[in-house]
Amino acid sequence: GENVEQHPSTLSVQEGDSAVIKCTYSDSASNYFPWYKQELGKRPQLIIDIRSNVGEKKDQRIAVTLNKTAKHFSLHITETQPEDSAVYFCAASRDTGFQKLVFGTGTRLLVSP
Amino acid sequence: GAVVSQHPSRVICKSGTSVKIECRSLDFQATTMFWYRQFPKQSLMLMATSNEGSKATYEQGVEKDKFLINHASLTLSTLTVTSAHPEDSSFYICSAREFVSGGYNEQFFGPGTRLTVL
Image (cartoon, rainbow over all chains, first blue to last red; front, top):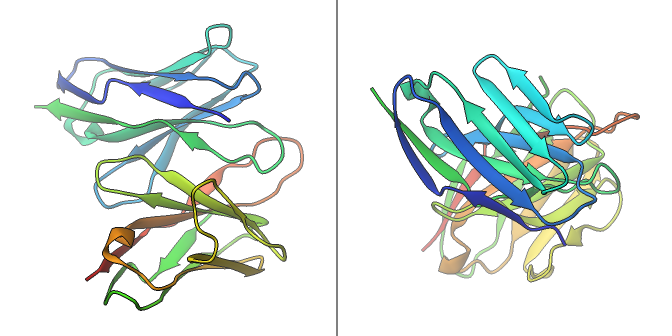
């Protein structure tokens, strides 16, 4: 089955800096890659996603890149703000069948003012 | 966006009792619902997938007799933790997916249920 690895486990940056979180997946049939932000005790919130037919997607300060050949994808946050502090999870899924998501291990991002 | 609710948000029970958690899709019909368990500072681990009107599909290592899942309608799925023990204490999160033909359908997550077994 699918296995998703995520790095780093923790990331501390200064406000205004950029943050990059990387994930690798094992199932070459996976073709949908969402990123979630989870604040303590809250539900995961989808912040951006990408499908395998594109290499990059951007939404304001957030971007995701995908390298299908290498089977890795990354989340880029620019001009970080303290409210970006949270745990971020990547996930991977096939776009068929039950479409279950396999989550990465999570990255705790801390943005210091 | 689509809204998924969960009830209760928190529950404390004694060891050996059973606890039922409800997951509802409020403004759409969920053909598929997923149940996750999240231990502190860990990732979401899928427990089972349930499709309306059929038996749930459990992930490897998840005891189906202990975690009973019922998806009797397109808007409601329930997870019952039977004979709960302290090691079952965790954050349980459901998600629901509405089928729309032509592509991947986003999963919408419930707010989670914090279960504490004494």
